[in-house]
Length: 432
Ligand SMILES: NC(=O)c1ccc[n+]([C@@H]2O[C@H](COP(=O)([O-])OP(=O)(O)OC[C@H]3O[C@@H](n4cnc5c(N)ncnc54)[C@H](OP(=O)(O)O)[C@@H]3O)[C@@H](O)[C@H]2O)c1
Image 1 (cartoon, rainbow, N blue to C red):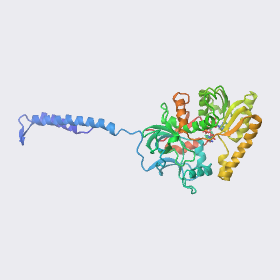
Image 2 (tube, rainbow, N blue to C red; image 1 turned 180 degrees about the vertical axis):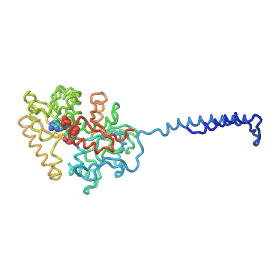
Image 3 (cartoon, rainbow, N blue to C red; image 1 turned 45 degrees about the vertical axis):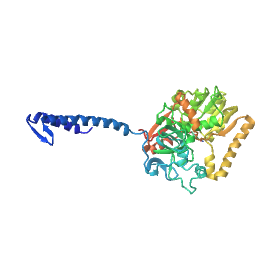
């Protein structure tokens, strides 16, 4: 509020108190005396006061903070400028705000994004050969290191700023969640990110951005592994016995809740500190892997499983297969595809990795009628639409270990690198 109404009010009072009763002169045809001075200043005080109030209300409408800010040229981000250990850095001046390239692109003002082991892997250069070929296939420059500086991050919750001309699913101002293709060098750990219309979904109404950002990547890793590849659904899962290794991780916490929502029986492994969390998420049988060998415990109980989701890799493959019943499936999220293609090139590496899978899978199929396959993450907006319904029904809840502001992203990655989780690590990019 300005001081003018007060000034005129004081003047009006002063004229009334101090100006003599007989004081009077004429300006043109207007008489100037104690009464006219007092009344004029009083009216001015009232008018200016009302104007101030109206302006103040108007301000609330016109200057109210929009849900997203208009992008400048540069943005803050978590990046790498070279591959290796300890190469992750926070930058506030190296990265341009991304631009829409495809008609189906959407510019999102990122509110929160979460960390996944794949981000760490990428920063260390693992999978580099394969991801570079994928980038080239999408028309990105082919020169060595053209993808650097690379912005890390694959999942996002935020507000749509701008949409390409073909986008129909969302519009500017919509609150969305998404995860982006694994090969993308413009990641989501930044103030702005590009998301494709096919990968985006409206954010669940009952979640904050921080909560929503914890789910898309792990949820879609589980969805592609179990629902799309294994055709597991709410009917198939009912009363089935399912073993999930690493229940307290990002993948595990989502997978347990999904299978429980669909009426399955869940056995899981975790370390001691995760047991309470596993009970809370509904796991039916919990094995502390630091105390007991899960294969020994479950074999002694003569238990077999219809489906096993492995998150630990080759050291667990044989144990998983031994525990899988006839007609069952073992799906692993840890395949040798990246390491083989990095070592032998895309074609020969992919052939070698596939042969290694078939070497395990074919005898299993022929002699035990069980399958062995890789689960591979893929972005999918339609699947997120379905997952949103489960979240809004309260059947799946985000599990967050800790949140960090964007400027502390490096510390967040150090925490991720320990490999021991109680849910997800989320970066609050913009909590306005
Ligand atoms: N192929 C794909 O597309 C894809 C997609 C998503 C994830 N992944 C991979 O899947 C794995 C899990 O992902 P995530 O996001 O769940 O990772 P995360 O959040 O870091 O969780 C790791 C989990 O592993 C558990 N763990 C660690 N050592 C263990 C052991 N010796 N035995 C049993 N459990 C152990 C941890 O439990 P404690 O904390 O109790 O030790 C924790 O629950 C990662 O390797 C990731 O790269 C692959």
